[in-house]
Image 1 (cartoon, protein in one colour):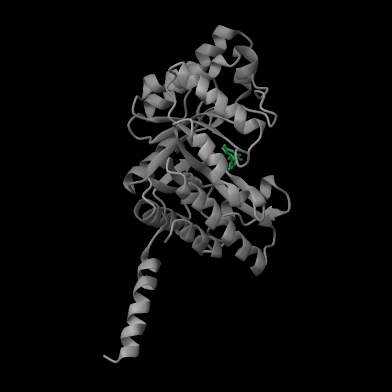
Image 2 (cartoon, protein in one colour; image 1 turned 120 degrees about the vertical axis):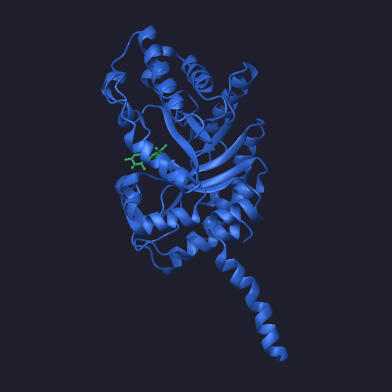
Length: 336
Ligand code: XIL
């Protein structure tokens, strides 16, 4: 063989290897972590293209809506778990980890829960909800987001029926009930705007330290990471993530998306590629970061346009479920 063709072959081999990688293979192989996951639900998986990418690229799945209180216990003590069951079955068939999401949250909460004013009644309702869900899925869930978004930006506790009626004790109550129902599941506290230092990050860390000191079964901290492209905090994301990990618990980026003004031009997508490299790289830089989950497979199903007016295109696959430059960015963040 001519030297130049040998050289061409030698150069082509790494490229071939890279193209056969998947996000999850890069995260579990090259980066040595547990998973690269996505949010999904049976609804979005009914699109064959989305299901194919979800099955091939990702190693974990988080139910985007199907395990929330309004979806699972719309009226008291009547549990509707078919949609969540279908997702967990899909995950098992396709060998995916499942991140259970979420047990105690002020949002997507049925009115009957918010209407409870009696301590004992709310305690019983909370324990019943947590116990029923966690028991039902026991053995099939890698980690549960036990409490979600319980802090305000200034570090005070969010105004919710749970905090208002039970005080901070609702947190320990929820974690203890979850641990009793599935001792093997990792139990997480999850929140957003943990992407920079400030009172919210500090308050969460101080609560986690208190919980650990009180022997409450808590094992992980989820940083949602709903980010805006070009934000300078993305380049320094490893610092707050390391601060969370310094509690001694494992951490994860649980709902990553990086939104851009819609429609995005080529330059915006290139910028987003760099942001994905930095955000995913932040997890890889923090030893206790076990994984990254993006908040959806394709831009066409993303919550972003409905929630942040004028923004969109925050994920790794476009409306046609094709890889975006951001995908290469995520790969580069994992050293792949
Ligand atoms: C969002 C879902 O993506 C939407 O489909 C739904 O309408 C509202 O909730 N933080 C969370 C997630 O913890 O559960 C939210 O998911 C996004 C913000």
